Amino acid sequence: MASNQPAPDEVADVAWDPSVVVPDREPADALIRRACLDYGRWRPEDLDDARALLARSPALAGASIHAAAATGDVEAVRGFLAADPSAVERRGGPYAWPPLLYACYSRLAPGDGRSTLEAARVLLAGGADPDAGFLWCGNLPPFTALTGAFGEGEDGANQPPHPERDALAQALLAAGADPNYGQTLYNRHFRRDDGHLQILLAAGLGADRGGRWWARFAGHLGTPAELLTEELWAAARKNFVERVELLVSHGVATDVRGRRDGRTPYQAALMFGNHDLAAYLVAHGATPVALSPAEQLAAACVAGRRDEAEALLAAEPALRDALGAGGRVELVRRAVEAGHPDGVRLMAELGFELDHVTGGTPLHHAAWAGDLAMVRLLLALGARPTVRDRQFGATPLGWAYHNRQTAVVDYLLPLADIFDAVRCDGLARTAELLRADPTLARATDANGAPVVSYLHRGLTHLDALIALLQGTGSGIVTS
Image (cartoon, rainbow, N blue to C red):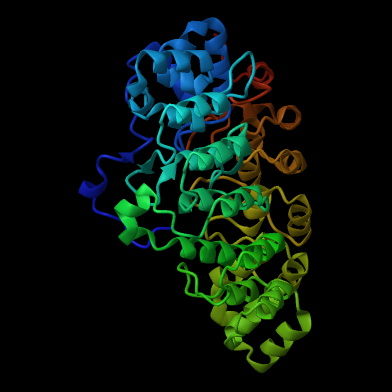
């Protein structure tokens, strides 16, 4: 979201890199790491380890004010502050954070007398800075306490919100947290839920609140009003109708160009085939902008407007080839993102590529989003479930599994090879493949990795999968 980034020496005191692993200095550090989302290595399965550590060693929760905040040991937090009020801002724990950040980034659910929400309230009452935060890898905008409360982000279901998200966010805002930070908004713009926006708008999102991060980095952050322009631009692309209406009802300008591609929300809506949204924006002050023939073709194809697309191609047949394979598959991906099955059908009939890899295929993106209807459609139109993306070497099934889209995983597992079947917890599919060909237990992938390397601790059927592979001569032994 930042327009430009500050120099490293300008941010050294507030930069934090989750990839830099510091050995645990205290026994409680291991507990904190497993309890807190870090936008790095943490995964939801780590909560099982955190709960197990707490069950074995309950005293760890009170080992420090940072551990108490991360586990929601409210009485321990009160005790630390009573003994030393300055502890409310003391940096410590495995990430050298102040206690409030551990409470806000913890994902331990309340129970057994523990509540990270109540711990946060005690810390705020004790003078904790509600705008506490850090610059992830030294980059703006900041990850603040509010960012931790709302959670989510590019890694989807692996970055869940705080278990008491809304109440924690409201507590932070009531204590003076500035709602105007782009990372919080960016992390939440992948889904239709507008709960965060309703809370933030009520607290003054879009108006300069004089927050400390703005005061320090104003030259790099744009303006609060620009945050809402970006939200409207993104919502118009994604066909998030209710979000567009919410933002427009709060006075967000409809004619300001977005910083990412220089297009207005109206143009963004059209380019993603969202003609009804474009008309709504015009009715609320947006200026219609003429599109080039290539842009008209894109808008018609994504929306599934067959007559318009065919007329454009009849007038200028070269438009299709001018898009190139990458451009054509990008339009299919847009239709998938905006939820336009008619557009996907039309483009498939026009010969647009479904499997050209530009990052992930349209099927990858539908699988990631958990859009089972779109997954079914793409497969029916000829999309191949075996295509792997370039960055991770993963199939659409792998993307769905990583993002915990169980309905899509269940649908795609019968099509999986032995590697995906094992990695994605497909016990029945693994058994089926091994019955047909027992030698698959010794298979290696294109990079030479054996199928047993696809086993991991997050598998529900780990022991059963190991037993299956053992029974076919894999040579694995359990310990």
